[in-house]
Amino acid sequence: MATRPEEQLAKMIADLPAKTGKSLDDWLEILKSQGLDKHKQIRVFLQEQHGVSYGYANQIALRAVHGGTADWNGDPADEIYAGAKEALRPIHDTLMSEIENFGDDVDVAPKKGYVSIRRAKQFAMIQPSTATRVDLGINLKGIEPVGRLEASGSWNGMFTHRVRLGALSEVDAEVFGWLRQAYEMAI
Image 1 (cartoon, rainbow, N blue to C red):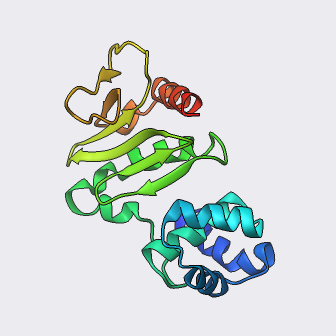
Image 2 (image 1 turned 180 degrees about the vertical axis):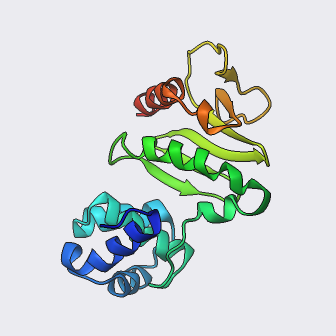
Image 3 (image 1 turned 90 degrees about the vertical axis):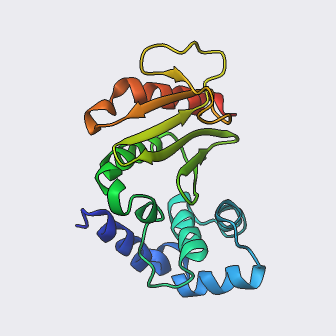
């Protein structure tokens, strides 16, 4: 049984023909012929037009947008957490693991220096701001900042709140609760 993320992703790609009726190369050709090049656009197309489940559609979209080939097995977050920020990756992975359980309508859109997380609206962002801290942007309109849940202020105008995370131990039930609340409000 595949246990490491790379093994799980490789298994998903190997299982594509059995699960979707087409290989990754077949899907990449279809997407190319459709002129689709945005992650969410591709994922929605695969789900709505071809009945591909969210997980498989997401993996096909990632490869189409970031690799364009069947042999790309990377994670866009690999670039964000390269070099001095590498030690922060477990914080990111723990947050993403929880967020992915919220529902099939979560859309993850990696950007150059951060990961945007959307439902109908953007509700969170994970950004390694320094070599020692991940900033978690959260949209919780109408919620008073308290303790670690601080007002975003001038940090990022797209979010109402920010949580500074410098250690994996700081990613706890309280943080997951704020994320869940932001997800539920993003409709």
